[in-house]
Image (cartoon, rainbow, N blue to C red; front, side, top):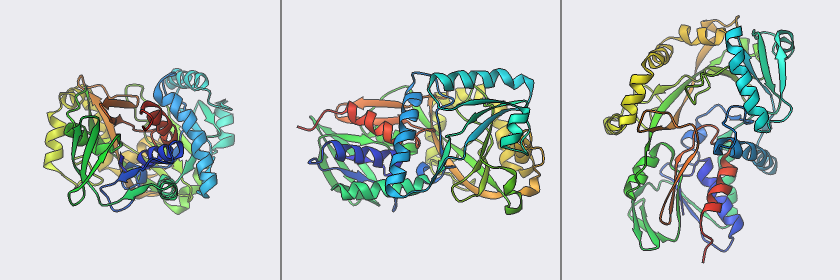
Length: 394
C-alpha cells in the first residue's frame, strides 16, 4: 500500500506493480484528485542535475529520473519540451559560484553543458544580461499534474487501485503487518506501507512513532507571470546563481509547456501545510512547525533573508527588481499574479535546511521524509530506489 497520490507515490505504486504484478497495490489519497499537492503546484521544470552534491541521492536519482520521465511522457503523449536553461552570473562576484555549479554538473554527468561568455549568452537569450553563464540544453519543462494522471491511469491498468478522498486516520503496526485506517473507517491490513505524503508526512510518521532529527516546514513559493506582450523576452529558462546556503534556487524565469513565462518563486514560510495563500492559516499546523527547535534556529540564523522574501511577497516592484538583475528591461507592470506552490522542506533539529532526499524505515513501513525539488523530476528513479529497499513479497 502507498499513501499519497502525488507523482512520487504513484510512481512507487507503478514500480511495485511492474516488478510484482501478482501483488495487490492500493494508493490512498486524501484529496479528490491525483497530483493535488506539490505535483500540481510547481513550475514544471525537469531538472538536468546541475546543482546537487555528487554522490547524493538527489544527484543520482535526478539524472536517472529525468531519462525515465522523458520515456513515460513519450509513452503517454504528455508534452515534454527541452527548452534549455541558462544559469547567469550577473557580476564578477558570482563567477566563482557559477564555477562551482559547473564542476558539480560535470561530475554528475549532465550532458552537453556549455560555458558562455556575454556574447554567447546574448545569442541564446538576447534580452538577458550577464558576464558569464552555464547552458544546459536538455533541461526541459512538462506538466507534472498531467504526468501524475498518466501514472494513475497506468496503475489502474496494471491492476492497482487509486482510492481518492481517503485520508489516513490511523496506522498501527501489528507484528509484521500494518493496519491502515482511511476514509470512513475503511481498514486495510497490508504487508508493506510506503508513505509519500509530502507536507503531511510528519503527521503520518507520528502515527507509527517514527523519531528522527528532521521535520517538514512548509514554504510557499509565489509566482508572477509575464503579461502576453512581454513573453517574447525569454526563450527558455533563465536562473540566477543560487545562494549556496539554501536549497532554493532564487527567483527565475521559466517558459512553460503552454508558453506562459513564470517569474519566481520566492520562499516564505507558509501559515498552513496547505497554505497556498496568505489567508490560508492553520493554528494547529503553525503550533507544530514553531514547536520544532529547528524552525526557531533556522529563523534566528536566516532572519535577514526571511525579511527580504517577505518583502518580495508584499511588493510586485521588489519581486521584479530581483529578476531585473539579469533581465534589465523587466518592469513591475510586466508582471501579473500567477499560481503559488507549497514546498515540503525538511529542517533538521539544528536549523539546517536538509539538502537531500531522506527515507526512514520503521519495520514494514517506509517513510519518505524529504523529497523537495528535484523530487518530481526524480520521481520514477525514487520509485526504483524505494522498491529496492522493500522486501520482495512472500
